[in-house]
Length: 383
Image 1 (tube, rainbow, N blue to C red):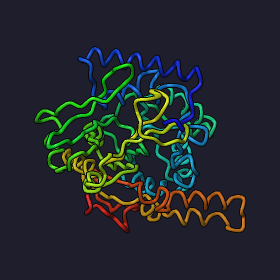
Image 2: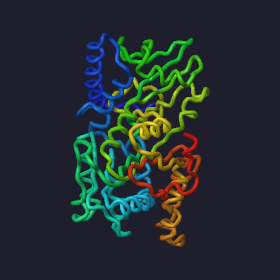
Image 3: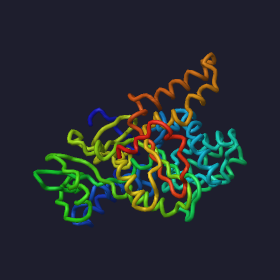
Image 4: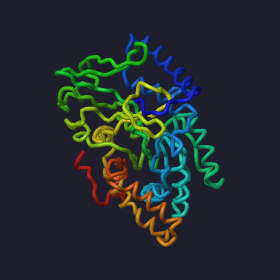
C-alpha cells in the first residue's frame, strides 16, 4: 500500500478519532467484531464515517466517479424507463442514497422535457452530510418549481407507488467476510493488536452457514455474504404497494460470484482514485465496496412477494432505453457537445469499462407490463 497518497495531518487526526471508537467497540465485544460491523462503522459513523464525514467523495476530485457524474446521458436515458413506470402507475420516484444529487437533477429535468414528471421525488439518505450536499446542489441545478417536488425522508414510506431507484447502493452495504479453510467455514473479523488485524472465527450452524455451505467453496477461499442486502430488499418489498424496484450496480450471478477462481472475493477500497484491498487502514477516509450477488437480490425479492422483472448488463439496459436516440439529439458536427457525449457513452457501454460489469435488475409488484430496459438481452435465466 506504499503507493497510496498519504493523508494530511487533519485527515489522519479524523481517522484516528474513528479508529479509537472502533477499537473501543472491539474491546467491548470480547476483542473481535465482524467485518460487517467494522465496515458499517468505517462508512456510516455519524460525522466520522466515510459517507458521514465532510471529504469530497464523488467525481474527479473525490475517490471514485459514478455513472451520473460522468454525464447527464445516463440519467437522460434512464428517464425513459422511469417514464414508463410513472405513466403506468401514476406514482412517484424514491431514490435511495442519492450521492451528490446529480442523478435526481438530470432525471427531473429530462422527465419534465418528456412531460412525465412525478408529483414528488423522494430521497432516502442515511448520511446527514450527503443530505446537505444534495440540498445545496439541487437548489443550484434545478429551477425552484422542480426543487419543490423533492422531499428527503428519514425512513421508507408505507404503501409507496411508483419507481424505487438505487444506483450503486447495494455495493456499499456492509458485508461479512467468509473464509473456507480445510473444510472449516470461518468468519473473518477484526481484532486489535497495535492496530487493526484480521482474526478468523468458526461459523456456528445456522446464521449464514447453510447458505455458504451450499456453494461448496474450495479450500483457501475468501468471499463475502451480505444478509443486509436481502434485508433491504425485504424492507423495499414491504414499502412498495405497486411499481418497480430498479437497482444498477456492479456484480454477478451467484454462480459467477462464488466461482472457484474468485478465491480472493470482491472487496475493494477506493482512496483518491486508487483501488486497493486493505480496508484496515485509513478508516473513515476511504470507500469500501463489495460486488453484488444478484441471485441473492432476486431470491430476496421473490421471498417477499415481488417478482424478478428483468436482469441485464448496463450496456444492454441503456441500449434498450434508447441511449442512441438520446445521443442523436446532438449533432455529430457540433464537436464541442458531441465529443464529451461520445466519450461518456463509451464509458457507460464498453465491456472494458462499465458496460458488462455493471448490471441492472428490476423487481416488480402489482406491475405486469414488460419493462422497456429489458426488451432485449434479458439474462434473468442466469440467476
